[in-house]
Length: 197
Image (cartoon, rainbow, N blue to C red; front, side, top):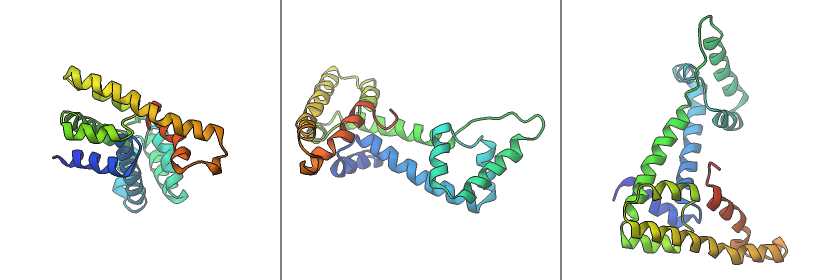
Protein backbone atom coordinates (compact mmCIF):
# COMPACT_ATOMS: atom_id res chain seq x y z
CA UNK A 1 0.00 0.00 0.00
CA UNK A 2 1.37 3.40 -0.96
CA UNK A 3 1.71 6.32 1.42
CA UNK A 4 -1.08 8.19 -0.39
CA UNK A 5 -3.41 5.19 -0.19
CA UNK A 6 -2.74 4.91 3.56
CA UNK A 7 -3.45 8.64 4.02
CA UNK A 8 -6.77 8.25 2.21
CA UNK A 9 -7.77 5.31 4.41
CA UNK A 10 -6.76 7.16 7.58
CA UNK A 11 -8.66 10.27 6.55
CA UNK A 12 -11.77 8.21 5.81
CA UNK A 13 -11.59 6.75 9.33
CA UNK A 14 -11.48 10.18 10.94
CA UNK A 15 -13.57 12.41 8.68
CA UNK A 16 -16.99 12.33 7.06
CA UNK A 17 -15.86 14.64 4.26
CA UNK A 18 -14.32 13.88 0.88
CA UNK A 19 -10.97 12.31 1.80
CA UNK A 20 -9.20 14.02 -1.08
CA UNK A 21 -10.57 17.46 -0.18
CA UNK A 22 -9.63 16.92 3.46
CA UNK A 23 -6.08 15.87 2.64
CA UNK A 24 -5.67 18.81 0.26
CA UNK A 25 -6.96 21.24 2.89
CA UNK A 26 -4.51 19.88 5.48
CA UNK A 27 -1.61 20.08 3.07
CA UNK A 28 -2.54 23.56 1.88
CA UNK A 29 -2.65 24.89 5.44
CA UNK A 30 0.67 23.25 6.34
CA UNK A 31 2.35 24.62 3.21
CA UNK A 32 1.08 28.13 3.89
CA UNK A 33 2.10 28.01 7.56
CA UNK A 34 5.59 26.86 6.65
CA UNK A 35 5.88 29.35 3.82
CA UNK A 36 4.80 32.33 5.90
CA UNK A 37 7.60 31.49 8.35
CA UNK A 38 10.15 31.09 5.55
CA UNK A 39 9.07 34.34 3.88
CA UNK A 40 9.58 36.17 7.17
CA UNK A 41 12.87 34.57 8.17
CA UNK A 42 14.65 33.74 4.91
CA UNK A 43 15.37 36.43 2.35
CA UNK A 44 16.14 33.88 -0.40
CA UNK A 45 12.67 32.33 -0.03
CA UNK A 46 11.01 35.75 -0.02
CA UNK A 47 12.88 36.72 -3.21
CA UNK A 48 12.06 33.39 -4.89
CA UNK A 49 8.34 33.81 -4.14
CA UNK A 50 8.52 37.41 -5.36
CA UNK A 51 10.19 36.32 -8.59
CA UNK A 52 7.37 33.83 -9.16
CA UNK A 53 4.83 36.64 -8.82
CA UNK A 54 3.66 35.71 -5.35
CA UNK A 55 0.52 33.63 -5.42
CA UNK A 56 -2.75 33.29 -7.28
CA UNK A 57 -5.64 35.50 -6.14
CA UNK A 58 -7.06 32.86 -3.80
CA UNK A 59 -3.75 31.98 -2.13
CA UNK A 60 -2.74 35.63 -1.79
CA UNK A 61 -5.94 36.27 0.15
CA UNK A 62 -5.42 33.17 2.30
CA UNK A 63 -1.77 34.05 2.92
CA UNK A 64 -2.77 37.57 3.93
CA UNK A 65 -5.12 36.15 6.58
CA UNK A 66 -2.59 33.66 7.93
CA UNK A 67 0.59 35.74 7.89
CA UNK A 68 1.35 38.76 10.02
CA UNK A 69 1.40 42.30 8.64
CA UNK A 70 5.21 42.15 8.78
CA UNK A 71 5.35 39.00 6.66
CA UNK A 72 2.89 40.38 4.11
CA UNK A 73 4.80 43.66 3.94
CA UNK A 74 8.15 41.88 3.46
CA UNK A 75 6.78 39.78 0.61
CA UNK A 76 4.98 42.64 -1.11
CA UNK A 77 8.02 44.91 -0.78
CA UNK A 78 10.16 42.21 -2.45
CA UNK A 79 7.60 41.94 -5.24
CA UNK A 80 7.45 45.70 -5.75
CA UNK A 81 11.26 45.88 -5.84
CA UNK A 82 11.33 43.11 -8.45
CA UNK A 83 8.52 44.15 -10.76
CA UNK A 84 8.80 47.94 -10.52
CA UNK A 85 12.15 47.82 -12.32
CA UNK A 86 12.16 48.94 -15.95
CA UNK A 87 11.50 46.14 -18.40
CA UNK A 88 10.26 43.64 -15.83
CA UNK A 89 7.06 41.82 -16.74
CA UNK A 90 4.78 40.57 -14.00
CA UNK A 91 4.39 36.81 -13.84
CA UNK A 92 1.92 34.78 -11.82
CA UNK A 93 3.20 31.33 -10.97
CA UNK A 94 1.64 30.28 -7.67
CA UNK A 95 3.86 27.67 -6.08
CA UNK A 96 1.05 26.60 -3.77
CA UNK A 97 -1.26 25.80 -6.70
CA UNK A 98 1.51 23.91 -8.45
CA UNK A 99 2.23 21.77 -5.41
CA UNK A 100 -1.43 21.15 -4.62
CA UNK A 101 -2.28 20.27 -8.22
CA UNK A 102 0.44 17.62 -8.25
CA UNK A 103 -0.61 16.27 -4.85
CA UNK A 104 -4.24 16.14 -6.00
CA UNK A 105 -3.21 14.17 -9.10
CA UNK A 106 -1.37 11.67 -6.91
CA UNK A 107 -4.31 11.31 -4.52
CA UNK A 108 -6.73 10.83 -7.42
CA UNK A 109 -4.56 8.04 -8.82
CA UNK A 110 -4.26 6.44 -5.37
CA UNK A 111 -8.00 6.34 -4.70
CA UNK A 112 -8.61 5.08 -8.24
CA UNK A 113 -6.28 2.17 -7.48
CA UNK A 114 -7.99 1.52 -4.13
CA UNK A 115 -11.41 1.39 -5.79
CA UNK A 116 -10.32 -1.78 -7.59
CA UNK A 117 -10.10 -3.59 -4.23
CA UNK A 118 -13.28 -5.08 -2.78
CA UNK A 119 -12.12 -4.44 0.81
CA UNK A 120 -11.80 -0.72 0.02
CA UNK A 121 -15.18 -0.68 -1.72
CA UNK A 122 -16.76 -1.95 1.51
CA UNK A 123 -15.09 0.82 3.52
CA UNK A 124 -16.03 3.39 0.90
CA UNK A 125 -19.66 2.23 1.02
CA UNK A 126 -19.82 3.04 4.73
CA UNK A 127 -18.22 6.46 4.23
CA UNK A 128 -19.74 9.70 2.90
CA UNK A 129 -17.60 9.38 -0.25
CA UNK A 130 -15.99 11.89 -2.52
CA UNK A 131 -17.23 15.26 -3.62
CA UNK A 132 -18.60 15.49 -7.17
CA UNK A 133 -15.43 17.22 -8.40
CA UNK A 134 -13.18 14.37 -7.30
CA UNK A 135 -15.74 11.77 -8.28
CA UNK A 136 -15.67 13.03 -11.87
CA UNK A 137 -11.86 13.06 -11.83
CA UNK A 138 -11.74 9.48 -10.60
CA UNK A 139 -14.46 8.26 -12.97
CA UNK A 140 -12.29 9.49 -15.83
CA UNK A 141 -9.47 7.22 -14.65
CA UNK A 142 -11.50 4.08 -13.88
CA UNK A 143 -11.42 1.74 -16.86
CA UNK A 144 -13.70 -0.94 -15.39
CA UNK A 145 -17.30 -0.16 -16.37
CA UNK A 146 -18.69 -2.11 -13.39
CA UNK A 147 -16.67 -0.04 -10.92
CA UNK A 148 -17.74 3.19 -12.62
CA UNK A 149 -21.39 2.14 -12.37
CA UNK A 150 -20.98 1.10 -8.73
CA UNK A 151 -19.27 4.40 -7.94
CA UNK A 152 -22.06 6.47 -9.54
CA UNK A 153 -24.73 4.48 -7.67
CA UNK A 154 -22.81 4.74 -4.40
CA UNK A 155 -22.56 8.52 -4.81
CA UNK A 156 -26.35 8.76 -5.02
CA UNK A 157 -26.73 6.49 -1.99
CA UNK A 158 -24.26 8.58 0.01
CA UNK A 159 -26.23 11.71 -0.86
CA UNK A 160 -29.51 10.05 0.18
CA UNK A 161 -28.00 9.27 3.59
CA UNK A 162 -27.79 13.01 4.30
CA UNK A 163 -31.51 13.57 3.67
CA UNK A 164 -32.76 12.52 7.16
CA UNK A 165 -30.20 14.81 8.78
CA UNK A 166 -31.17 17.73 6.54
CA UNK A 167 -34.85 17.10 7.27
CA UNK A 168 -34.12 16.98 11.01
CA UNK A 169 -32.32 20.30 10.77
CA UNK A 170 -35.09 21.83 8.67
CA UNK A 171 -37.87 20.83 11.07
CA UNK A 172 -36.26 21.35 14.48
CA UNK A 173 -34.42 24.03 16.36
CA UNK A 174 -30.71 23.92 15.59
CA UNK A 175 -30.01 23.24 19.27
CA UNK A 176 -32.49 20.37 19.38
CA UNK A 177 -30.81 18.50 16.51
CA UNK A 178 -28.11 15.87 16.62
CA UNK A 179 -24.45 16.58 15.97
CA UNK A 180 -24.74 14.63 12.72
CA UNK A 181 -27.66 16.79 11.62
CA UNK A 182 -25.73 19.98 12.39
CA UNK A 183 -22.91 18.78 10.17
CA UNK A 184 -25.21 17.85 7.30
CA UNK A 185 -25.17 21.29 5.67
CA UNK A 186 -21.39 21.57 5.22
CA UNK A 187 -21.13 17.87 4.33
CA UNK A 188 -23.81 18.15 1.66
CA UNK A 189 -22.41 21.38 0.21
CA UNK A 190 -18.97 19.81 0.03
CA UNK A 191 -20.44 16.69 -1.60
CA UNK A 192 -21.82 18.91 -4.38
CA UNK A 193 -18.96 21.35 -4.92
CA UNK A 194 -15.85 20.04 -3.14
CA UNK A 195 -13.22 22.29 -1.66
CA UNK A 196 -12.65 24.28 -4.82
CA UNK A 197 -16.29 24.95 -5.56
